[in-house]
Amino acid sequence: MTPYSDVVMGARELLESNWREGRTPSGLVFGYTCPDAVKYPDQFFWDSCFHALTWSRLDPARAMRELRSLGAAQQPSGMIGHTTFWRGPVRPSRAYTYNLLHRRAFQTATIQPPLLGWVWAEVAERSGDASFADEGRMIVRRFHEFLDRERADADGLIGILQPDETGLDATPTYDQPLGWRSHPKAGFLALQAFNRRRGYDYRRVVADGGFHATDVLVNTAWILGWEGLARLGEPGAAAGAEQRTSALVRRLFDRPAGMFFAEGPAGERLRVSTWAGLSPLALDRLPADIAHRIVNEHLLDSRCFWLEYPVPSTAAWEPSFVPGSVRYLWIERYWRGSTWLFSTWFALRGLLRLGYEAESAHLAERTLALIRRSGFREYFNPITGEGMGARHFGVSTIAVECAAMAEHRPDVRESVA
Ligand code: GLC
Image (cartoon, rainbow, N blue to C red; front, side, top):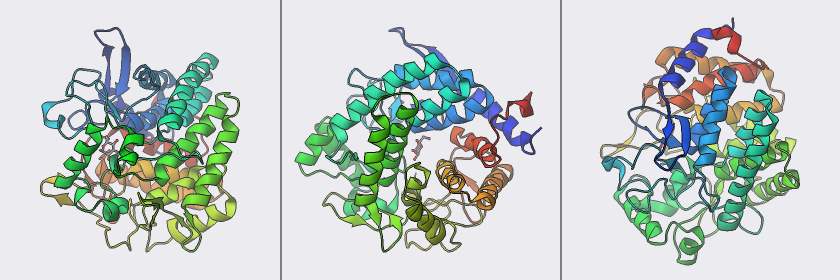
C-alpha cells in the first residue's frame, strides 16, 4: 500500500467514470477520458496527454487507448486539434465560442501544447510494448511535420494564433498585446472571427497582421515532443530537441530577470511572470545554470510561486494575480493566479531532474493535501486550497503521477489491487 492509496483509488474511480468509448459512423474507434462529464464532454488534446500519464500508472492498456484516440483524430494534414468531437457535433452552447471552421466540424482548427511525443514515449516505455512505440513514432512524426510546416520559424520555434492555444486561456501574458480582444472579453470573438475567416491558417493570419506570439509553454511542450520522438527511435529527433532548446534560450530567456517570457506579435518581450515561464525546467537539455536560477529566484520564492499550495498560474506579486475566482461578466477568467495541476507536473519534473529532493517531496505532499482538502477540482486557490471550476476533473488525477514521481516509484498499481 502507498501512503496515498486513498488518492489513487479516487483517481481511478474518476478516470473510469469519465471514460468514453465507441465507434464513429465512419468506423473510427475511440476511447478517451473526458476532462469533466458536465463541463468538457469531448476529447481535449493536452488533457488527454495528462490522463494517459495517470492511466499508465494504473492501467497501461487504457493509457494506450487514450493516446490511440488522439492518433485516430489525426487529420490527413498531420494536425491533431485542441478538441475532438467524437460523439457528434459540438454542443450548441459552444458552437460560437469554440474555434471551429463550421458547426459540425469533427475537430477544432486550433492546437494545444504539443506534448504528445513525450507522453507517447513514456507510455510506450511503461507498457513495454515495442509495436506501440512504432505506431506512435509515425503519428508523432506526421504531427511534428505539420507543426514545422504550418507554424515554425526558421529557428524551429512555433507560433500561436490565440492565447487558448497555450492551454492557459485567459493568461495575463497576452493582456497587453490583446487589450479588448483578450479572453473572454467581447473582442475575443472578433479575434476568433478574424482567424476563422483565414481558415485559422497561421501563415495567413501573420501575413494579414493578426495577433500571434511565441509562447514559452507551447514551445516547451514542443521540445518535450521532440525528446519523446527521439526516445521512440526517430533518427534526427534528438538533434531537433537540442536545436530547439538552444533557440528557446536564445529567444525567450531573459537574463536580467532569470525567467522565460513570451514574445508578442511585434517581437516584443512580454514580461509577465507566469508558471509558463517556469515550464522549461522540465526540459532535459535546459542548461543547469539557467534551471537553477529559475528554481531559486522564482519557483521557490514564497512571494512568487512557492505559496501554501504551489504552483500558482501567475506569480503572487504580479498586479494581475487573483488567487480566487475571477470573472468577466459571468464567464470565468482562467489561469490568473489559481493552481492547476498541469503546472505541478512540469515543475516537479524540473525539481527532480535537478536533484531538489526535499522540495519535490514537499510539492507532491502539498498536491496530495490539496486533493484531500477539496477533491479533484479543476483549479484551486493557492493560498486557501479552496477548489473551483469542474468537480470531477481528469487532469487533477495527475496528483498520483506526481506523488509516484517524487518517490521514484515505477508503479502504483499494487495500492489499488
Ligand atoms: C480549460 C483549460 C484548458 C483545458 C480545458 C479542458 O479551457 O484552460 O487548458 O484543456 O479547460 O479541460
